[in-house]
Length: 490
Ligand code: GLN
Image (cartoon, rainbow, N blue to C red; front, side, top):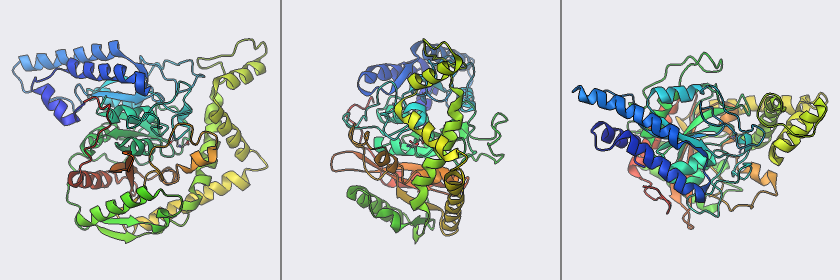
């Protein structure tokens, strides 16, 4: 599938129709789903109806002889992670416990995309309640990585990452609580952007860790990511944590000149545990930025080594509270043969949740319990503040910090499933941004010797998405990442 601006131009010029565009995306989604399992629902009928409506509006404008001035995403097919509410479609969160649930409303991000003319073609597979780094925690089977189907696509937004990587849609939404947009983007060779906390409304995003969650964007280039971000960003009365900060025209800010911009590198983050090929790729990316005129400065993030521990205390604490609502009464699934109320709660949660979700509820309940609250939860919140301060100090010296996104390229199915700690360590580079609330982007920068994509991550100060996109655009213009997985839909 082409990039948004090409598609839109061809639609406006009448070289292709909205229906043909949307149908191509739906056809590819259906065909590739047998291999990839990227979608949990594909809404052929709904998507084509909407395409026809938009097509009819378009031809009435064209027939009246006017040059159509169209909303920015007219006729653009998009895929949405199955933990973001879209009216008329299911929301399962990759879990059995929701039934699946059919929400009667749209998430704010979805309303904004629809107002801009986008067409949602389906809901993408993900780790259960967005908990995971490999998609193996989905109750509906894992998504396969389009570059190598014996490997994981990353998680938890693996379905959205795979859908963009495989060329089914130009763009998709995911959610990022500790890296779930950036890490699968890295493993699937696409861009993944997590905005500043409070940039995009969480209304209609099923809560995992409320102080960490943000809806994020998958795309193949900076312009497409910018277009989607500017559509979904901004204050929303339905979400009190959205900030009243003006939304820039991100596409206008995409200049390729980065002369004199400063990029921070923490050499401590490029040591132990990092795959050698990833380290080499990151060093090449640093050189590439030097060649583009950026200045490289040393930064120190002394508390980053505690980030995994802090994240898995805070995220599980918040999850244990957020997931209390799934009790067999309010949403879809209810266990049978449970005569008494307590039994019904217990059995429903036992049968409805998978192993990882249960592990997190137990961990989260433990760290919040009276005897341990100070030792774990309160301590973690204090270290979180220190980490924020680390970033503030770093950003006093640079415009963005460059790190790997993930310590390794895509790993094989089953490789880390028996060792939750090894799986958690995969998030070492991504969780810091959520703890600090700062924005981050993963950009493909190399292929490994086995032909697997490697991503670099750029982190910036609050509200610096325009800077991150500009650095991305400059890099991509100079080093276009043209490799595509074999099953690329075109
Ligand atoms: N992999 C991390 C976790 O399992 C991040 C998940 C996310 O960002 N939703 O919690």
